[in-house]
Length: 375
Image 1 (cartoon, one colour):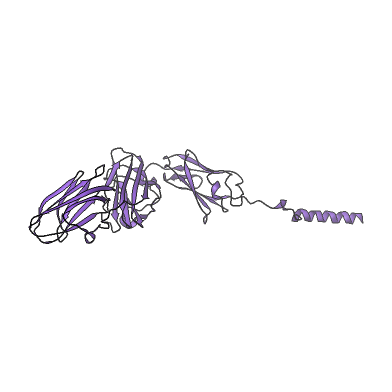
Image 2 (cartoon, helix red, strand yellow; image 1 turned 180 degrees about the vertical axis):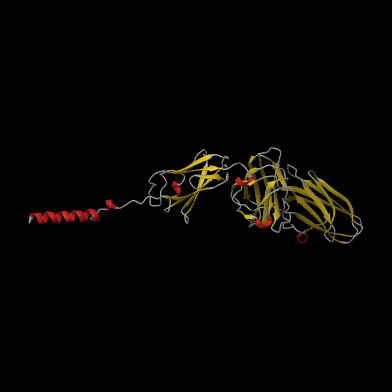
């Protein structure tokens, strides 16, 4: 009898060990694993602008993914795609050519249940030589208007390139929802020549030149340039100013801020919006880059008109003053960085004439004097 009892106890003990008998100490911990990497471990001839991506077997805690390290790269950010369970390492400089790099995913990284990697995961790759084939950026091919890459305002873009002997440009498309100032920040972070010049140019969506076109700076170097933009879709194109044979790597940002302050005559940006004026002096007017100022005045054949522009704030900036006839044809133009006077202009036909101002900088305050003589 005793032996049967002991046997029964032994059987029950075994069952408890297998099933846990209500004790959760037997629950298995499932650690996340690295399932795939880019570049693959041992890859060679890798691009100098490549991204580094790591895929996991489980949903990861994004806050722990900063524990992914790349040899010789001290500054980086990590973006995480929940749908792909993928972490992408964003570096702040390109890789050195023909160099071995090691990536270490430290076991500190954890999934959303708090489970860490069972051990560090490492992989390595070797970059290729410094040539155009190995520094193509992720937006290629975007070398013409039809292939312009959409970009967002207030978003920095890094590891862009312009390479080789051709006058190759990068084209990007962006949309301005409401009138704003945009500061163009362009940083040429690498150049294999110090005798070149880098271009940033703005076009309308159809490819025609926008008013803010044609700024360039030496390389390597930094440019910041601020202009007003009206609502619409635009193209910004960047690249070497001429077809010099040199290669650059650059970062790019279009940063928005409050629009240029306007005056009481706005919106007078087009001929059909021109503010009607009579002879006299007008003060406390304000001009904004891109946002042209048009004024109209009724004149009679035989009269003479003199127009004087006086800037009232500093520093002075380049601007243009034009007078247009009744058919909106430009009769006379002066472009100066100082005060401008146009006169005396003889009027040959009775009708509505236009005075137009074009500014190269925001927040220009000015006085306008219109003098008309004759019958």
